[in-house]
Length: 145
Image 1: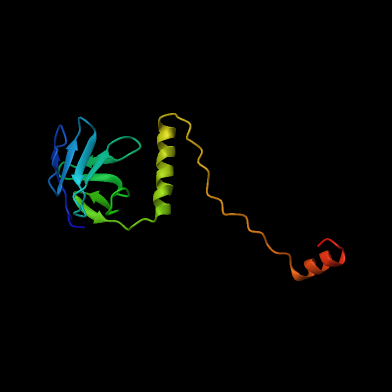
Image 2 (image 1 turned 90 degrees about the vertical axis):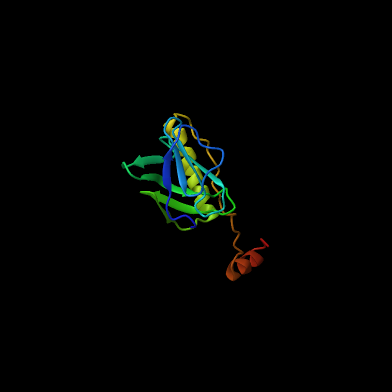
């Protein structure tokens, strides 16, 4: 992580150009934004909703929960902002990311009273097992082969 700390700035509107190392917080629009902490320069937006991020302000620093996983960015950075400190979190596999996306969609559907779309689970292809030696002998003897 290039940025080990984010300093917060309360704003009404998120500025067009994000200063690296600054977490812009708009309480009016219940969202925050910052330049990705890895240093890639991409904009990261975290809306505050019952099913997205929660912001805690202790009077001096800001924390965001859950972690920030930039899976759609080229950098795929993953970190937590805790009391203004940026704590690098481990990388996630594509399977972990997809599982979290499914959980997130289900949480949103449940919270907003919608029926979640049933997504087909990935099932391994059925495996055909070749009959054993004695089965093949029996089938040959009995004329089934």
